[in-house]
Image (spheres, protein in one colour):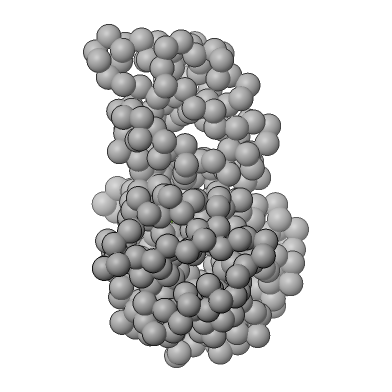
Length: 356
Ligand code: AMP
Ligand code: MG
């Protein structure tokens, strides 16, 4: 398949270029487009065959549902059976933005989108290019992250080209996604609402509006055979670079000491090792491929570059990555969730005394 790549200025989207992409969507094609969270792989949500194309291009398991994107709150009522009162307050506060609300679906949503569930996740992105594209397409747009299933999500067009060139009709390039992690997925069918996937809107932001919020206990759970996820996407190993990822948690001095020791051991064995470190500690590592994750006191800086950094390690041929743990506070919860999944649950806890 030929993939057309078009550059569109984030702050001043060219409508003619977007009209071309919108027509591709309307006629059943696949368009990768920028959002404020990550790049999305879009298809007309009302066209079951087009939606099948998304699963096919990504190699996505068919039981993992898709999020439906809209450009205007007026597009919502026909997609859901009802908008619960708490959901409405969250919409007023955080749409457009990185919050997906799971509500009871209406009959216009094809079952393939929701993997047979009677609920659908809906969000209104704030990215001007995403909004304009969806508005011009005049259809709701189903879109998961625009990456090969299981790999780190894409936050630049270059990432999308790496994963999906030749598999989709159009890739829109508008630079980097600013948030860097996906939307928060919130089950709004229950009270208080439950965070199924942490993301760009923090638990604190949700509870400020909803009065309370629950965070699903299985977010950091292991994916053993008996694991029954509340959100199908929780089942899968996810966001994983080629390299083996380990998260190291504990007092920072001990973490640095442990990782330095591992780097030296690996170097002796000829294993190329990477370290994802904070601005605060990155200079304390000996010979290793060190990438700066951002400022540990400003988790939004870590989120913004997270997937790009994981992909960079692969480009550098790193085989094992040690990642410093970050505080799971604010958007740091989403950062740690993605890292935990990328690591396949491999978290090493260093207490004051050494490795535990
Ligand atoms: P992706 O867009 O690939 O980043 O993944 C979308 C995420 O939203 C997945 O983890 C899904 O499991 C979750 N999701 C989408 N729709 C629903 C739904 N109706 N119920 C629960 N989770 C959902
Ligand atoms: Mg994804």
